[in-house]
Image (cartoon, rainbow, N blue to C red; front, side, top):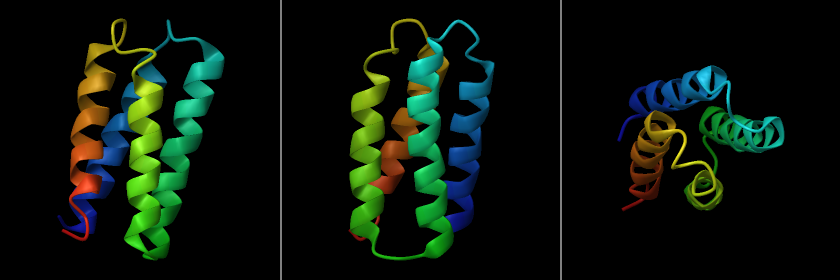
Length: 88
């Protein structure tokens, strides 16, 4: 998967986070921090294992909001799948 596509997917996740007004602010902050870390990792182009670990953290965190935020959950799922394929 190319970096441009990953950046677009991440931007979609960040947009969904911004629009999730009913989400607990602490949960949103936690998800945003992980998304920011993913962006930094993509920008630095370092070891892919870090991205895979961040994707796993994001996947765990999204489980807490999936019932109330299906669009965000779907976007995160697509991003996590794409990130997990890095280095395959």
